[in-house]
Length: 356
View 1 (tube, rainbow, N blue to C red):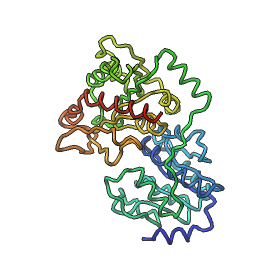
View 2 (view 1 turned 180 degrees about the vertical axis):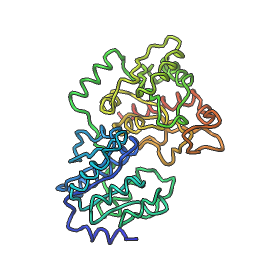
View 3 (view 1 turned 60 degrees about the horizontal axis):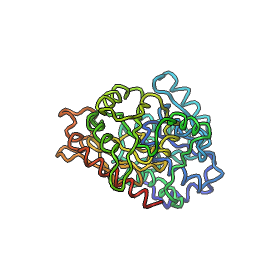
View 4 (view 1 turned 90 degrees about the vertical axis):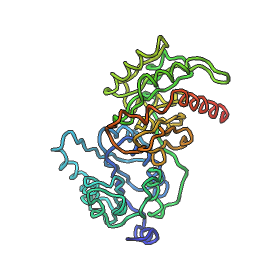
């Protein structure tokens, strides 16, 4: 296994063309953006490309640190060979595989890069390590994933830099967000409804209870206007939350927003809450305080950057189980009380007020 010092020597002079391979989850791509920034600072003249899938590609649109996104749509598997041809034709000299699966390893190898970085064998799946020729040190499983990605920068010998995500909406996207929020009084409570795993989702009646409590002014805290956010698959969940609101006004945007919309909407919000999800990480990345709710997965590994102290975990012996489907009715999420969520949201508001 090559040492970080050896790698730093081997990639001098600086690489001309760099490929980052992280195809999948929105939250993972968000947490890898600080590594992209670190690489851009270290090698300002390099051409940096990112291999990604459509569900996360919106995060990379207009990104000032990136030169190119190479998109593979897994719903059209027959396009995989064309995707690999684009990777091969990129003539990359450094590939960084952040995903640790077979498909990402193959993508890295096909790039033809002389230096191909990946996770060490204890941290990979599907023989991914066989496609790399340099590996970072083994990572503790419960280390924050953002810091696991930062370990690649350490191994590459690039200087540490401030953790920044570089996400910014365009003027047109900001105008669209303001139009969607036109009838939403400030301050706004962003209610993140869904998650890619059913086991992570908070109950609609509990979500509604939080909203109702925050719709009443409290000593030192203003009342908040709720805006429900979720993908098309969360429309039913949003409807259930709305039915439990007992007449509290709310704006339901579930199914009406894209990733780019969220990048523009969250800066307009005073605070947000919801389960482990991609939008949770987007909110934190653009500076919106997030109270995150944890059951099947662990805050120790995935808490949104900068707001780990606001995370709430359901106290149950099997937590975290890392099961997509819960066999016991999401008991961990049920044990997260609306009162505790509300208290943390008010705490987040106080922290934001103290910070100016």
